[in-house]
Length: 221
Image 1 (cartoon, helix red, strand yellow):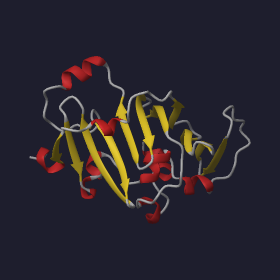
Image 2 (cartoon, helix red, strand yellow):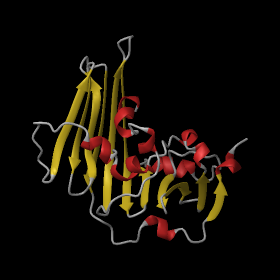
Image 3 (cartoon, one colour):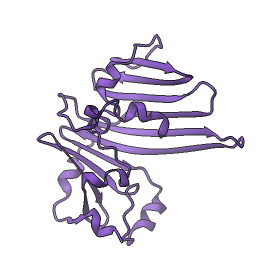
Image 4 (cartoon, one colour):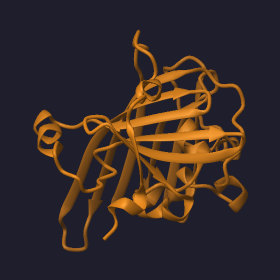
């Protein structure tokens, strides 16, 4: 997802630190990711995957949508695979915390900030909670592209043949679509969030009583 780093990561060091989020509505989202790259050898590589996200005040829970066979194969394995585990990001008293949860194995794995990069987490609360930092979005010019989502407006910018577009929902305070690429068509990435009906069950992090607590270091050789 390198093309999106200037947008999804933070534009400054201040943006990378955990900050108290303004009041924002609870959301349940389905998120689809698409990447297309044309190599110098003329080979087109495409990647698609989906995640489910639960957003509540001070909490973001993210799970990869896996085929049934993958879930079954993973059971019984003790190696740490952050892609297959649920990611639980928390903001407590202005401090960001991260853990991965093995629901089937009933384990919680705490990740110290020094290891965030090793589990492909950039340390940004804003990126986790809003999918793109609101301060950065506010600095992008409004676009004339029409939006069919009430309360959402497109913002976009282009520089040196590369573009970034965001459909930002002012009401729900979330990026519904994020696109980035180059005009030459060599690279393109798209992230799209769709609203899901809120389940009647409690948030997943409230169901972790009795789970064993582990540290990331427990899985290192």
